[in-house]
Length: 161
Image (cartoon, rainbow, N blue to C red):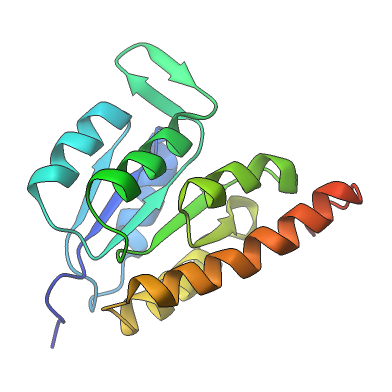
């Protein structure tokens, strides 16, 4: 039986990635609501309660306005305006900790590398969904641990493997 409030909001501008994600969704998950633009995703997030956000960092801020860090803006606004207890997972192709660190400083809770494939993403998201609901303290503690690790990696010029 499905837990309440485990719908996923997916912010991804690559149609192939969206198709793969939606077709790979677990039956225990709720609906997957997809967006390619930050402004549309924020409008919906304000109206519809989601249990989890999956965010690509480089997406459209609005129609025709692509930004490599638009996903970070989405994360920061969700954390500031709406929820400190809904997990946010970044899906990225970057292996540079310096590229990922701003998303955690904005409020992301986890990340997966896109080139690790859909099974890795599905496994990670399934783990997050199984433990809904989260407290602000739980997410903040995990986030701070990842921030410290990414800062050390950035300072020592170490790439993710």
